[in-house]
Amino acid sequence: MQETSRTDPLFVAVETDVISRADVAGLIAGRLAAIRVPGLLPAARCHAITAALADAEMDRYDESRVFPVVAKFGPAINDHRDAGGLRDDYWDAARSAEKSWSTLGLADGPRELCLAALRAAWPDVAPGRRQGREMHVGIVREINAGLQVHFDDTAREYAGRLLDADVVAQLAFNIYIRVPPVGGETVLWRRRWQPDDEALRIPGGYGYHEAVAADAQSLTLRPALGDGLLFDPRHYHTVRPATDGRRISVGCFVGLTDDGRLVLWS
Ligand SMILES: O=C(O)CCC(=O)C(=O)O
Ligand SMILES: [Fe+2]
Image (cartoon, rainbow, N blue to C red; front, side, top):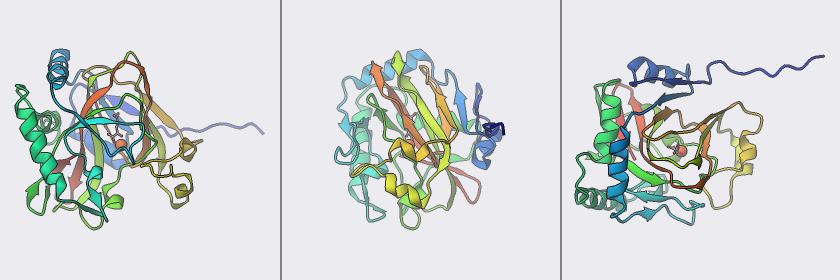
């Protein structure tokens, strides 16, 4: 008998000049795997941000959990998660990131960059709120050595609701403001977490051995400078190491609320 390997025709990326409402809806509905926006941010603006950041103090994700190391600017919810909740030091980190960014002399902060990218598609977009407080939006990450294979799903990672709103779908959004000449690809797999996957967890880490996605259809996306990328982070995904150069992005999570708004957080 002849074996044929079948692929899901819906697990594809669309390329567009501006993110449209239909594409965001399609991504959430599972009609698409990713939305790529080549040149979302002009090269000159990417260079201006990375140049200004050279003078800023970056910190790192908690190195006991996030290895290889990932440098960042601004808080990441997962570094402040405790017993399914968000520790108060998240808010202190958010305030100090905003203060420190304001000294860089740039027109737009990471919050505005993320909001602006989505506003054309979805005018009703705003930072999410938790217990009445506005979440931090826009984390700058330098992921030179790659990521562990992982998924992001706030509904699983936080007890109850992270935000005051009911988030019915979550997306991940990134703009690449510096890209390496080789490596640094984002890989998505057509596979979501299943209970048995826990056997393949990386001890102490945030991710899984790549075998977790073995045999699943995959999509490899190589970001170019200024590109935007939106995908469903419940699909297992990773970033391949940059063998040379630096890979810096500005990104956030995007939630669709039960009343049809988009809310952002980092
Ligand atoms: O940098 C990327 O391309 C993806 C990073 C990631 O894991 C995420 O945004 O959830
Ligand atoms: Fe992720």
